[in-house]
Length: 226
Length: 72
Image 1: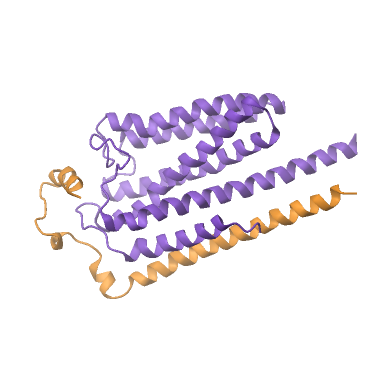
Image 2: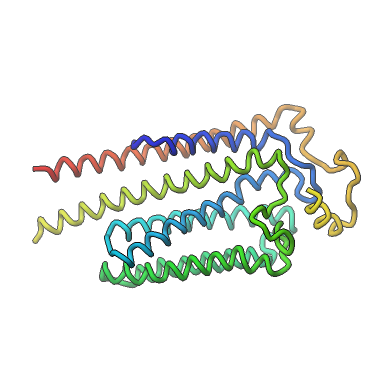
């Protein structure tokens, strides 16, 4: 295994998140009660997704400036991983909503926005699947990626804040500090976000390496069969 | 904390005056059962991390293999 300090950091942060997440103090609030601890797991899924999609989009932009197969592999595998994080975010959100808001799908603007954003990214994969030519596929999906990322940001972070949403932080505090976190929770929340993001990058990096190996093998076979 | 209470309180129709009135998993904690939950989740996490390490090693092995075959 390629030893990296950040992989070990990720493991430590995640173990700390689980330990602290269940055992450390949280504010006693009505309706959410103990489920407020879900904050350490549900929200980092989304932050992780945004960072991973950001890397994906930056690779796409770099690809358009100077095409290289490596950048395309980076873009598609980070998109894959980001999408999984998004699915987990929606799933965990539905679970949490079921017991606090009364039903898994409340028609809340952020929930709808997140679902639409994921559909937009799903279309990215459909687009890739429909193109045969490698270079064309990489180019067109890179362009689409930029659109997908910007719409995701508006759908999840901008539009819900403009309307009344049941998600904390909407219709209220417009700062980045959007969750009313008390100091106790911050001690677990920030490390949790960092840990889950690092885990996402780790997973994506393995995917990238495996994809590159796969493509090299295909190239070698092609050379042999020429 | 005040903002959440003032947002969600009126929805319920009653805002607890003292934090002790909000039900939390105090019984579970006092019986020490919360540690069971923690250990279970840590086991799942450890298993997933172990799996990640295994496939990370597999990727390294494949990369090295390719490098060896390309040299001659």
